[in-house]
Length: 82
Image (cartoon, rainbow, N blue to C red):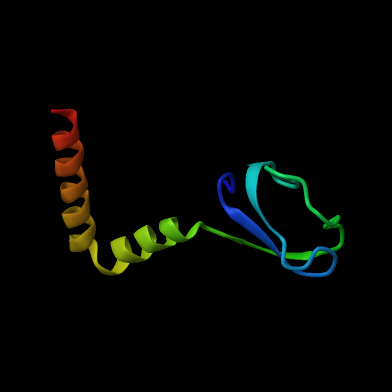
């Protein structure tokens, strides 16, 4: 559910550190790289990478633009194959 998203420590030990979530269970998050400072008893925030946020908000509020960009990307990829 959270794999590939970012986790940022926003309070407590390790405040300001950001890591990518490599795996998770219902009670444990595993980060791709170890924390510089132990993050025990910290407050954290989980968020999507910025490119995923842009895609989400564009699809939600401007669905026609998503179709336009997907079509443009497909054309570019097809030209590179030739």
